[in-house]
Image 1 (cartoon, rainbow, N blue to C red):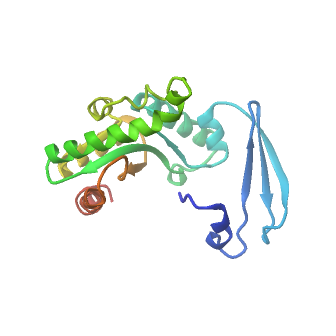
Image 2 (tube, helix red, strand yellow):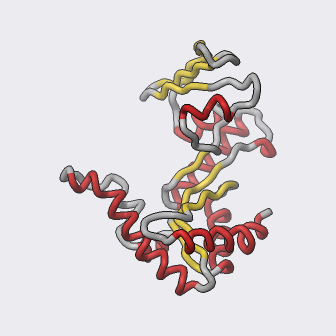
Length: 210
């Protein structure tokens, strides 16, 4: 699932590729599709809004969420039920994933030391504009102020490769996901530490899930 600048979209498409636009309202979702030259778009269909997971399944879209595990489980189960009810094959199921903060280091202690200070700065910056405006941070329940609390909520992990492998496996078992998105670079985490984290994850965590 790529995220790119809008000016790069045309170059990222395969020859003849088209774009799908969504107009998401409170009661309906309008869909429009472009021509292959990417000059004009025409209406495609309008979907009646239902439950989020069922809507996503009807669109055959990938789904990634940052909510806690119990809510993720409810979403993936609803998506699978809607997917099967539409007559789709289980083997064709789109990506259903979570987004989590991840730091991998040579030991649990080293990883947590890195994660604590980096996350604290990241969380401060995330909440800054709301606090500056005198408003409560709207996702404070999802992102607490300290990394230890985040980890206790199973919303992130910092540890040696074995610890992170166990965390990912448990996340899959508890939530029914088939896709795992990592935030490896956040807050004040030094580049060298983030690069080492990615290296350890690629070499010592990912092979267990291939």
